[in-house]
Image (tube, rainbow over all chains, first blue to last red; front, top):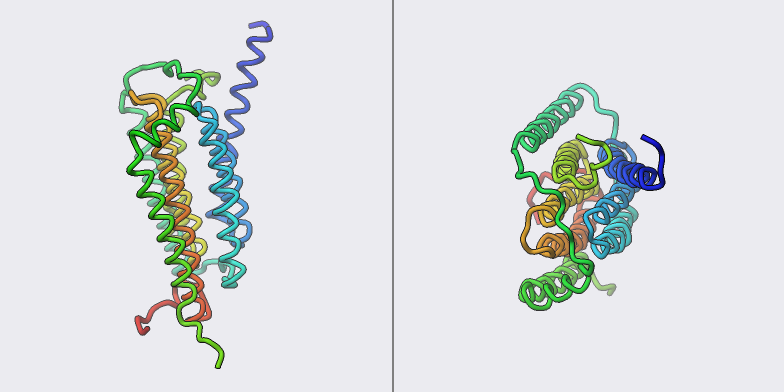
Amino acid sequence: MSLTPVVMHSYLEAAVFVSFVVATLLGAIFAVASRRLVRCVCGLALSFMGLSGLYYYLQSPFLALMQILIYVGAICITIMFAMMLTDPQDQRLPRGRGMVLEAACLLVAGLMAVGLIVLICRAGWPVTSAPATPVDTFKELGRALLYRYGFAFEVMSVVLLLASLGALVVARGGRRAKP
Amino acid sequence: MNFLLWGGQLQVYLIIGALLFAIGFFGFFRHRTLVGMLISGELIMAGAALNFMAFGRFRAADVVAGQTFALFIMGIAAAEAAIVLSIMIAVYRNYRSIETKDLKDLEG
């Protein structure tokens, strides 16, 4: 196969996709396996960056943008704040019974992953190439949020309002006013 | 399976979602602090959202259903993170620690 520009282009596309996949999985492994919590949060941010690239490959640039804005920009920062306000201990090296427990967790999680992957590979999904997407998912998404999913959208805004009010109440409760 | 076509295959995304779920599951039981458990919970939710997106892209009649659900999952995750932050602060004020082994009495 000669390297015409078209072939080069498809190779480049596949390489970028694989790098997003690697970022997602490596970041996730880093987030659960590191012993220092700051590094866990950085791994989480890396994983979410990779995930936003995968969303881009799933033809939804809006979700990719929201992923970076909400997860990396808001949730990772919130977790950082939680760490700074509560001063958690870093994970200690497990020994004795802790080691056995950790190995058991790893075994169960590995079995679950293998089982799910076997199921996915043997499920025999009807062979469809990716459907030709409409060019403008932005417009469609906005319309769906306001018409078909309008009620769910409103309920979500109430949930967010209650969550922020509840967070204020819970975090403030128990703090006494100075005499 | 051709390596060049991975970006357009349903199974590839499902496998990544399953791996994210398993990694998050492992972290949820491994971490000894509430912060670590929150991080792992976010990974599990991300795996679920990726599954919704993949099925919405490849299998659904409605092109935006999967994206809408992923957006709602993001909203739920943001609300959850805010609540968990405030609970952690409340717990830390009472116990001076957020390690799960220290949180074992129910007195108010």
